[in-house]
Structure formats: structure tokens, C-alpha cells
Picture 1 (cartoon, one colour):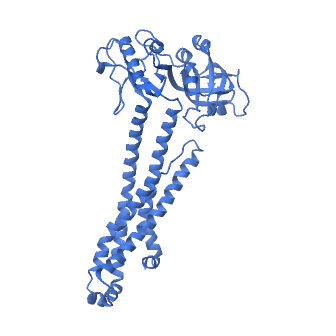
Picture 2 (cartoon, one colour):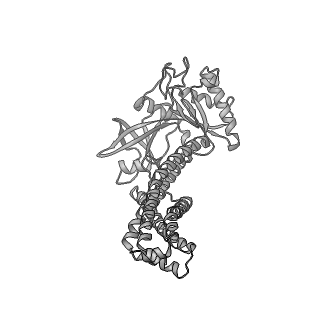
Picture 3 (tube, rainbow, N blue to C red):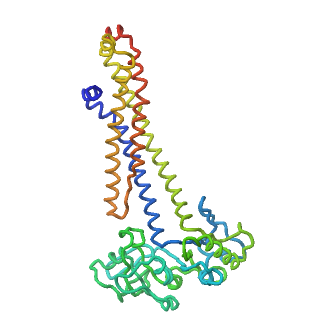
Length: 418
């Protein structure tokens, strides 16, 4: 009966459900995008390797962001600036097995934006300066050529490893570019190799990078020294010998750096040491909060849609006053009338919710398609269930008043209604 009543006014029913459709679609698509962002961030961190510990050149509260004023007077980097606290010498000290026995690998990393050219072909993205140990850290192999070695690192050789996406941009015709000269920020480099694809050729991801020796990066592209004239390292990655020794590694690295930076009290650290799980938890909390906020904003459409349903149901009660009187006259109880109009309201909201889920899923897939697979929007079962639940609740809540009004009509007055 509810379906027949709604089908009698098809256009009105469709327009009534639009608010629910838009609200549910917005919630589904925004949550899917939030899940996709979180998955992308996680994949980028995990691509670096397992059992990682990050050393940052600033005080970092993993529950509240970075504090750039955490540098202390007299310490390396006290001149100011987020990237001046850690040095290449600090990274070398962390490699000392007598001081940091649980560090299997120590990898300093600096990065910056740059432009590269190969003939008429151009690329713009991130150049990463690191040590040869970085290959051992993330296990990324070269499909052409080979990773630069310690001799290249110590001599600040102008050699470059191309990520798969950077390679496609600079050498669209394919082939082995090893030994070819390219220019990065107008500095000549020789291509040492091309790295295998790691993250689906994502723009801004690990594949969209050029890797060079850190010493070369600091001398040729991103010069940076602290107040003592020491070459700085952006961050330092440590890999624990096994996952059970991550906390021990954090303590060992902290003590070494405090000694080197003349830090006496914990709250005066001009660096931070955090595990990979700490960093992922921080990013996860931020992205989750943003996703919930956006979903809540989109949920306002559900409220507006509920008001629309109530409005139309009140109109429907008025239009069908004589029908209600007739049903009551032949024995329909108030509960039956209440259920009739309440079911119509819920059917409207549920239909709108189902269409909204399809629209939200389609929008999420469209975003994935437009990004050409470089970003994957993830539609979760939880988001679908929440959307359906809310649409049912909206229909029930906003349908109660019109249904109760219909149930309370006096049958004699209803039959006389014109």
C-alpha cells in the first residue's frame, strides 16, 4: 500500500527523496575518500620498510603535531629552522654498534622539490637524497642499471636513480637510460638506473621521485649547514634488528643524540624519536577526524531531507483525509493508520538511502578512475551500514508527527472533509 501511494505521485516522491540521496551519497563518498587517503599514507610509510624508527629534527608530539620552537640555545641547529637539528655526523654516530646495538640500518634522508629535463622531456617532483643503505631498507630493486654505491656517496657523485613515474616522464620512449645525462635544477646528472614500480605509479608517491646521494643533494641541490658548519640531514630512519627491539632502539638513539646535542633535560630535546606505528597512529587520527567532520557536514543534508519528508507527508495526510476517515469508519484502529503513514515515510527514506549508496559508490569510483589508479577511494561496509541506518532513522523520526496526526483524525470530521 505504501508503494502504491508513493507511485501515485512519482515526481513528488522523487523530489522528496533527493535530500536523502544527496546526504547519503555525500557521506559514502567522503568516507571513502578519507579511507583512501589513510590507506595511501599507510602504504607510503610501509613502503619504507618494517620495524622503522624515525628521528625528526624537531620536538614532535605524536598526539599533537610538531613544535618548531623546540630548539635549544647552543645545540646544533640553534640558529633556527626545522631542518638544522640533525646532521650527517649524527647519523654516523647512530651507526656505532657499541652505542646503538639494535640498529640494523641507519639511513639519513633529505628531500626537496626540483625540476628535471632530458632533451625536450620534463619532470617536476621530489628529489630524495639518501645513502646506499636506503635500498636495503625498502628492498626496491633496479630494473635498469644499479643503485649508487658507497664510493658514489663519499665522492658526492652526480648520479641519479629514477622512480618508475619519473622515468616515464623523462624517457617516454622507454629503453635503458643508464648512462644518459639529465639535468636536475640545471645541474648535470648521469642516470645510474631505474627503480622498479612500487606504488602503482602514484603522482607524489615513491615512484614519482628521483633518488641521489645525500652528499650530492647537499652540495649541488639543497645546500644546508648548521651553525657549526656541519652538513644537515632532514630526517634519519633507523631499522630495528627485529620488531621486539623497537623500543630499545628508540631509547638508545635518544641517549646518543642527547649526548651529542648537549641536552640535559627531556623537554629540551631538539629532536624526536618515534616508531613507525606512532607516526601512522598520528596520521590516522588526523585523517579520521577530518573524515568524521566532513561526513558530519554532509549529514546535514540528511536532516534537510528528513524535513522534506515530513513536509510531504503532512501534505499527503491533508490530501487523504477522506481516505483516513473511511478506513477508520470500517474499523481501522489509530495504530493501523499510524503504521500506514510511518511505513510510507520509511520507504521514502530507505529508497533514497539505497540510491544514495549507489551514487556515493559511483562517485568514489569516479575519483579513482580520474586519478588513473594512483588513488583508491575505499567504500567501507561500516559507512554503508551507517548510511542505511541513518536513512531509516530519519524516515522514522520525521514520519512520526505526520503519521500521528493522521491517526488522531476524527473519522466523522474526516469523512466530511472537502
